[in-house]
Length: 242
Image (cartoon, rainbow, N blue to C red; front, top):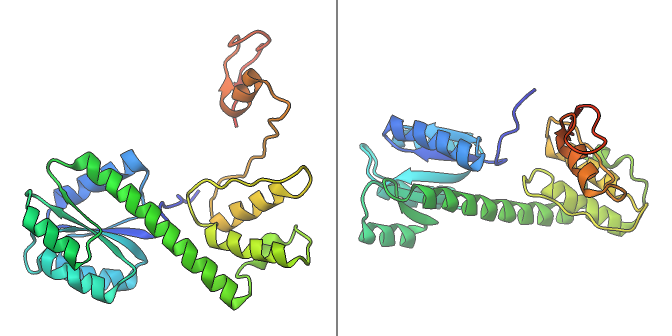
């Protein structure tokens, strides 16, 4: 089974210290579930990597040989205006932080003392980029007036313009890792919409539908997470959760 990368766009780590690249890759994966990471140890290769990969966010070290982060930052902003840049420094340099923000950096962190704040900053940046990309995708789809993947909606029979607009919206948000809330009366097709979103998401796992309306707390928990024999009254055998 192929691993689904998160987020849908790549995050580029640019630092001449290979140890930091390895540590940050592991930290982002373990603490934030971020797996779509590209590493660049030579800053001279960074701009080429931005051209050849779908990068949404760059974590850029400020002090590097050949090309400093301060020199690379404005080139990234100019050549790739849709890419957000978080600047990282080994020192608490207030003047440098101000300068980087004025040049277009999204944020500035000290790598040695602000590890947790950096992770939170990356998570915030990812959410902002996802939202911006979704908005652009929605505008693009409404302007073209055509669906990119009409086969994902083949089970939904409709000629409604409102539903067609909904399909365009679903295509725009389908790749997002954020949760989606679908509301509507019984029988309107909420599960069909959920299946369309799941198909568009590219997730490799199965979509499991659970009707929880008639389940009490114990059975609800058991259905989702399973239970061991004897866990509660009536649990006469072990059950795997969904």
